[in-house]
Image (tube, rainbow, N blue to C red):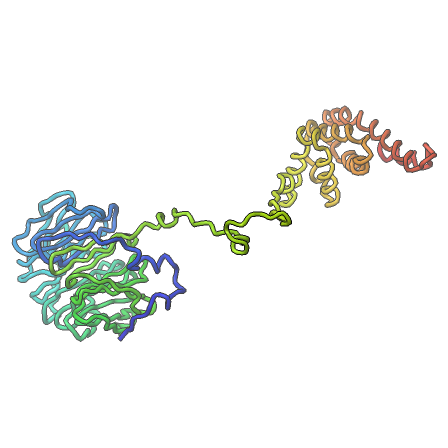
Length: 498
């Protein structure tokens, strides 16, 4: 017997999974009164995700947020059972008390197909994975496979010895389907072998069966027990759950496959974790539960009860929670001095230092975009107003040894902009050492190779620059020599410049 544990015991699971089937995250339920006991609720797997409610001799189609049926199918002579959508949401199949199986088009009202063959009430119908066949189980102990296009019976299985009250088809294999009976057995049939391939003993009259989407696990409900079977191991029992006080009537699986829900005559819905099979949540209702269904992405939970009440709960919007602004906490000095404290004469107020943001050229240097950094500081607004910034960037590039790379590949216009800046600022003593080194690198660039036109352009641009460079060298040599204006190394320096 599985015991109930609080959700904190499973704190390692993602929050979205924890919240999805939590009681606190659903709105106040909307209650809709039907004409009789609600025996089946089934959601369409396609937008707009309407759901079909089977009650008494009618099938009502509801929108996800509507409280009135948007469509009604009432062509039944007696009680209708188990209305089920096809995978594409376009067809609906239902059984009836008189033994007939009817197929409806959602856009119409009259039955599209009628399958006659059962002699007693049909409580279980479902579409196979190929969408062209219907499986039905009835109180005449038989299970039948029908062909939709021809409206004919294909196979009949007579292996059960009591009422067949539930069943489901595999979502992957069109030939496999499972049925549960009041003879305490659950059988998996294969249409290719004309017989059951797996049979398990539940121990109680089986009220509901559920096959996992992968087809590897089967869940059966009957009596107070919910049992999980491993079909890949021939129907080996994995776990037996006994958390309800009365008969379990319905089963449902969340869209993520991480939650298993069971409804019971004890007026409770239990939510299990499919990793540990422990109860993580529980919902209470006002009457015994006959049917249960979850909408797409678990946005809505719908429960049908014996008193004809349909309970619809919608999940709360998470966006509203996030939109509420957080209250700003008081500053630290508020806790020390108090909220109404006034600055005294001897107090020294220390302000927080303002956060400094990097300039664009500093960001480029930080990300090794050297050419882009050089382009930014060569803009007229920077070279005229703050030439020291341009010089500092040239110095940093030279220190890194990438100044030649930053200057490489530039055309005549870009090179002339660099040279014009050097000519204007070479005469300033604070910039001269850096700019002379930069000038030597520029002159050494292999820009004179190639076509004759580029050679002429290069000579026109660098002509006045070489003259200014010679004068600058003379000035610096004179300053270094002190009293001597001409030194023996002057000739070598001029030669290296030219």
